[in-house]
Length: 288
Image (cartoon, rainbow, N blue to C red; front, side):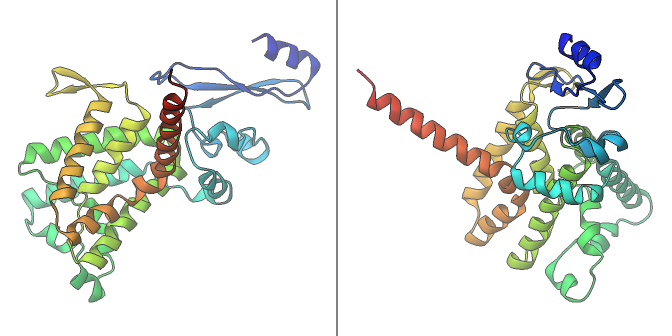
């Protein structure tokens, strides 16, 4: 705070973050002073890694005070470059649009027409016959676990996790992540001939949420508090078991459907594995 006061008195510009503890979801503040008139301005970023494209318009146009190195621990450099050029194309409230569409489809299926999912689902024959609207409509079919309760809970968790990721990443990066998941599912449908569904797309949202908020607690069955990282490990284990038990074509299907996870978290996982290997080699080399 002394730095802000002295900068305001001297008419200089100062940018620095307020450090927050892991798992703390309170807004992160960026203090800055405008050198032209010496007035202080406080820019609110909803969470760490939040883009300046979701900040105020004046800041987005004239104050690019976030440096790439500040966001390297959370995102890749190529995303920073894409966001600077095309950040205005991010879709705001994407999760709300997705959830509203899934609720509408569920209501139509229950009360109007039970065959509505067949008119929206994506398959290779229907796509080759020119029904291109299915490239978008398949994401509005909620994944069914066999009962209406599982569908409702799935929609709720999609809204809960998706809105949290939107606050964390900003509209553009969340849009890129979601669209990459859609492209992976569409590519898998075209290559393997499988029916496109939202299972892996919902799973990728859960894994991203668990990676960003590992210590957040959720109530299992609305009673038992469980940390999100355990949900993530359990979901990842189920995916691995399904992958190992699948046929070669099924394995390719699982890999392509998780395209957004590989693109966003693959480089960081690779660097972490290399660092762990080097650390273990150093320990063995220097062990007495």
